[in-house]
Length: 115
Image: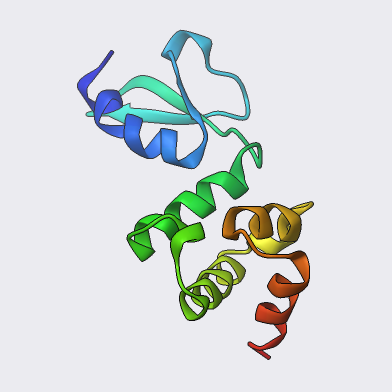
């Protein structure tokens, strides 16, 4: 694999996509060019796994698993996930409540307290 693609791999993984060989590029892929040479392409993974990636991002920002945080920190998690658009995803409230180890009602209360 080209060194440029190796360097991009952590970002591609974080975005939920994949690197495609230059010979396998299709219309929806983003070409990756290094010094004028097509070395591969980025293929989006779409929304598949997006909520999990957002939760992991917020856990890194908070410095701890979100289930272990205190109430005010969990409110901050909900605020941050809302900023990132997590609640536009199907079943997000239920899944986030499970990760926070709180009820859906509690997540709705955290969301409403931001207004």
